[in-house]
Length: 308
Length: 231
Image 1 (tube, one colour):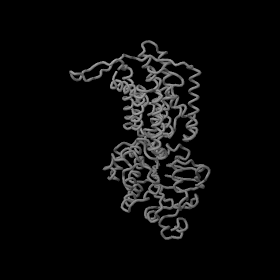
Image 2: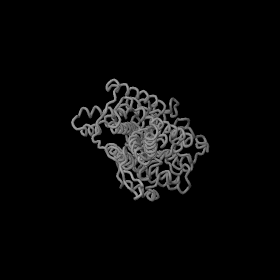
Image 3: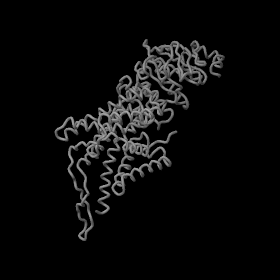
Image 4: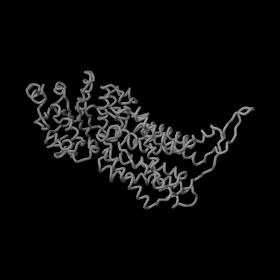
C-alpha cells in the first residue's frame, strides 16, 4: 500500500480517537471552567460508562442494537447521577476548594475503581456493536491513462466507527447549543464568570455545580459507551483517556470549549497517525511533549486567556 | 422596608461589623458613610447573604432574609449593584439583563422599561459587557439590578471612576427609583454626591454604626464629616 492510503487510515483512526476524546475532555473542561475543580476521577466516569454499558447490554439481551441503545440511553444519566451524589457528599462539603478537591477526586478515583473491581471483576469484556459493516475506502492513483480509482487492500473502516464520529459531532453541537442558546447554559456561563454575583442574582450556584459535575461525568460516560464496542470494558480503562483529556484541556486552554474541541482533534488525529506509522506509545510521548511545549511557550493554552 | 438590627459579620474569624442597626423606608435614600475599611461594603454583602451574619437580623418587607441562602435573598426584592460593577464580562448586554429578569421571572416588556431609562444600552444589546465604557458598564449594572423589580436597592459606590456627565445620569436614575418608592441604601465615598441625594446618613466607624442623621443637618455640621470621613 502506498503512503496516501496509510494517511487516510491514520486519519480515520485518529478521528475516532478525537471523537471520544473530545466528549471526555469537554466534560473535564466544563467541570474545571465552571467549578474550578480539577477532577482527577474523570477517567473513572468514562470507565463506569463502559462497564454499565456491558451490564445493560447483557441485561437487555436480544439484538445487539437493542442492548447498545439501552446502554446509550441509561449509562450516561446513571453515571451523571453517581457524579452528582459524589458532588453532594464530597465536593460540596469541602467548599469546592481547588486544592482539596484534587485530593478528594484522587480518593474518588480509587473508590470507584475498587468498587468496580469488586463487583465487575478484573476481566475485560466486550459489548457487541449495534452494526459493524466493513467498509472499503477507495483511493486514486495516476496511471498512463490518467487518474483511476482503486481499492487498496487494508484501507477500510467500519460503519460503527463512522457512526461514533458522527455521534460526537452531533453531541458536541448539542452541547454548544445548550451553552449558548438555553437558560441553563446562561446560568452556567454566569456562574463560571462570577460565582458571588451569580448568587446575588438568585442563581442557585450549588445546583448549577452539581448539574455541571453530572453533565461532565455524563459526557465521559457517553465516550465510554461509544468506545466499548471498539475497546473492551475494563476497570483500569479510564487511565489513558484521563491523561489524554488533561493533555487536550491544557493544550486547548483550561475552561475553553472551542479550544478543547480543536485540541482533541489535534491530539486524536496525531495519535491515530503516529500509531499507524510508528507506535501508540510514541503517540503518547509526543502528546506529552506537546503539553510541555505549550506550558513553556503558551501556558494559557491555544484558546485560553492569560491569568491576570 | 429594609430593617437591619444588631448585625454582625466578618471574614474567617475577623469580625468586621459589630451589631450595626439602621433602617431604610420606602422612597428614601440612606447613605452609609465611613472611612476605608469601616465595613460599608461588608455591610451590603452581609445584607445580600454573600457573607454570613454571625448575629443580628435583616428584614425586607417584614420577612427575615438573614438566614436564607444567598441566592434566595434577591427573590425578596433586594437588588444589588456591587462595587466595581461585577458584570458578567463575557456575556452580552442582553444576557446580563436576562440574568436580572430571571430573578423574579420578569418578561421582556419589563426590560423595555429599563432600556427606556438607559437608551445607550439598547444600542449595545448584542455587545459583550467588557467592551462597554465605564459609564455604560455602570448603566448596565444598574439596569441589571432594576430588572429584578427591586423594592430595596443596594448600591456600592456607583459613581466610582465615572466622568461627571455619567455621574449625573446615574444620580437621575437613583432619584427616579426613589420617587417610585424604592428604598435605596447607598455606599458612596463622594460626600458632595451623598449630601445632594441622600435623605439620611448612617456613619460607620470601625464596623459600628451611629444614629442616622438627616442629610440636611449634616450640611450644616462639617465637624461630623471631618470626624467620620476626614473631609
